[in-house]
Length: 378
Image 1 (tube, rainbow, N blue to C red):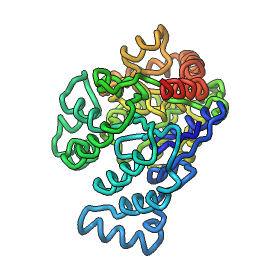
Image 2: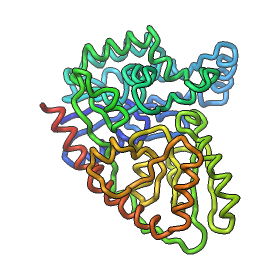
Image 3: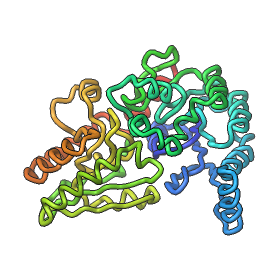
Image 4: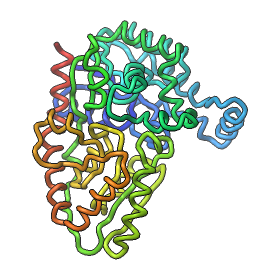
């Protein structure tokens, strides 16, 4: 099959492409790299002019005056330049309801062209969109990434990217997409919880992880236990980073001679994953029920990851032993979990081994690619 994957936020589409190509399919990714993360694509809609010296100055001036990022216009224009090449694919998959990330009216113009030029278009629910945002705002779960906003509405500006999915302007985009797609596939339990009763829900297909290119090294603790915290300021509150920071402050004071803490901020994807190679423990996020892409790649390397591993996740995969630490928005809880691992280093090694085995069993990129090709063909 000829397959077009539109958008990339986490390397999900890149790993899926690798799995599909291993099965003999022809796959093209069109995406803008997702800012500083700089994910690879075959057709790049990266805002290159906005990153030049002149473009960046213009961009900053306009943003300060209007709070509008002109890079969004460039994303759309560069996508439009490829539009004649984006036709007659057997399958098209959108990474999100607004995969192009341009202004709403331009987004709809471009998406209409995709629908007009291709018959079988599917939507992937692997990040916030209209249905997910609505689910979060209705407080349907025990907790969610919206907790910080509910507790402090002054954070509205930082949560605007989620709230914008509920705007009338985006609702038009949502309606356009749902009127033309064949169905919606979810990548983990957090999105299944929001979509499971929707008539267009096709099921859960776990994130694909290329375990052939991610090396597993059994954890060895020879001196200090290394704890890694990666911070993206854009998701600081939605990931609950403040809980990790407070827990680390307590842990560092108590175990100065036993641990080393490494903190990194706003790094490109490749730099980020290389930064934590020497770590034993990775602190990912506290508000999720399942693991996101960064957590899964760290687990594939055999790291002990503090992330979403709620009962909904363990029940779905029939797990009886920990493959990750279920992180919660509770400083004392996080401190207790870290203390246990520091005092019981053999458990760190055991969880790391189970994490790798879990990824190989449930997230193997070729196995997952087969699931996609099967669900697309129904």
